[in-house]
Image (cartoon, rainbow, N blue to C red; front, side, top):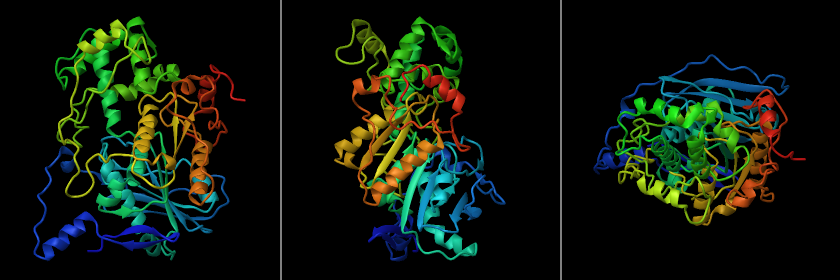
Length: 482
């Protein structure tokens, strides 16, 4: 009965409460009945092994002295770094999708240099499972935050409890960061942490909307190539994929043909509308490779669920218009396209904690600053639009600042951009003014050739996720920001 969580109280933390599993144990001990067991999923039988590290290197070129610890907690590998001059605040880093292998690995945050040189401690979990297991990511990241002081003591350093805890991450880790601050997680997670603020980067902050986009892309591509789907899932997708690519591209994936340009327009409208860097994102091999690797599934997200969660009934496919009434050709195309409907409760709230794919409902009450590249097609800019709409619907848009970055690749940030977003969130949380951000919804704003100039920072560093020369080549096609 020692499952606890941290809650903010007067700038500090006190640990209270019971997680769902501990509550179940308490009910059993008191003569109550256990809740009905949850159904077994393919994910539940997969075996994963944390990679045991002997340590990780000091930050190159930094004079800041830190303690750096590695280990395994509850089946997850972890890294922790605490400056000798720790400022009392802890940052939890959530990594992105790590594939389907059995090895569980952990890495460093992109803004590591900013963190340690400003006195922040940080910690990162590998999570106890691979695949797209956001539930495991939230629980294991939270568990590591709760174990921070115990681990420090075991490693020989006695620390006060963190005065504040923040969370940040990329891609799937952005989903984890956004989900971890939601009311749903605060109420239902087994390991509960009340974070003071969050910085989801290139995040799946629209949760299931990402999977719906993949489904819509697949259906539209099939229809345009003359091999339209009649049922879902598509049983012979592996055979159809090269046929579709040959029909829609003169050179896959960099050059679509006239028919493929219709798909290009459809995807533009599904991923955020007309905007700078979309054309480059469409022709980017890594973007298209990531998207095509995500097509052809059965809607269970590789066994994270037991039933289909994809729903394309809300998608309108546009290749001649961007708003208003559909053209006659678009009306015909939409009428002839298969619509996929999700199985009811495929991703319902579980009785044993978080739902299998935690939702981002816009129910949060701490400062959030996001960044997203404009040309990203794998986790497209549209995620930011969904997030804004959900937060607004819940009356929480006052807590949300979003920033567009002028680059093409998925998570193709500079460390300076990530550090700036994090610093803005921290200053805001500490009582400063709400930081500036970008309008992510107004079509005319997004379509401007200088959109994204305000927060794009091309200053290079060793920690960047985007090669300077590649970024410069893309930016050269658009009006200069100065």
